[in-house]
Structures are given as C-alpha cells and as structure tokens.
Length: 170
Image (cartoon, rainbow, N blue to C red; front, top):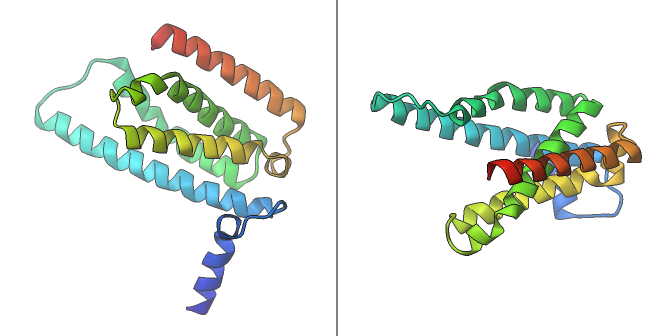
C-alpha cells in the first residue's frame, strides 16, 4: 500500500510541490492522465447522446455531428504520440488545445451574458489554458525535441487558422 501512495505522490508532485525545474516526464504523465479523462468523458457523453438520438429514431444530417467522431481515432493517436515523446504528439496536442482556447476566448461575451453554462465554459477554458501553458514551457517542449522555431510556427499557424475558423463559422 505504501508503494502505491509513493507512486501517486511522485505522480502529483508537480501539482502539490511546484518547483522551477521539474522532471518533464512527471508533467507529461499528468497530461496523459488528463487526456485519458477527457477522452473518457467525451466518449461517455457521445454514447449517451447517440442512444438518445437512436431511441427517437432520428439520424442527424448535420456534418458536424459526424465530424466529432474523428475523436474516436484522433485522441488515442495523440495519446500514443505523446506517450512515445514524438514531436507530432506535442504539435498536435498543443495545436488542438490552442485552437480550442482561441475559439473559447472568442465566445467569452456569450459566457458572461449567460448563453453558456458558465461553470463548464470556464472549466473548459482553464483546462485548455493549462495544457497550452504546460506544453509551451521550454523543458516540456525540449522533452519532445521541439525547438523554439517549431513552437513559434505552430503558434502562428494554429492562431491564424483558429481566427479564420472563428470568422467564417462562428
């Protein structure tokens, strides 16, 4: 039992005892747990949604309904790439979270005015910000072999795509 307590304490050390220099592996392990929890949450919600829709005998014809099922494959692929410390794992995870963060921040007025469920909106925004912040840290980027040049290019490309998406689709 003590071994389990020690391994959990070691896992959450970056949160419980923050330092300037922490092993990147520990941050990455926390990110992997968060990715798995988000995926499980998404999967359960989508399964419940599909069950509700099928009970009513309705098939949605909006492409965005089917587009979201890309996550069935996308999230596990990103998880494996991050787990194996591949550059593309960092790039995809950072890009996904930055893209979502920009879109969430573009809708902050709707959240403040009460059009969204505020707690969920601010939770989702905080989690995305946390991912972007942790992944941007030099020690985490270096852990994946990401250079400053790659970081800047990824930031610029994703930010521009998110802005264009926001302008045309929101």
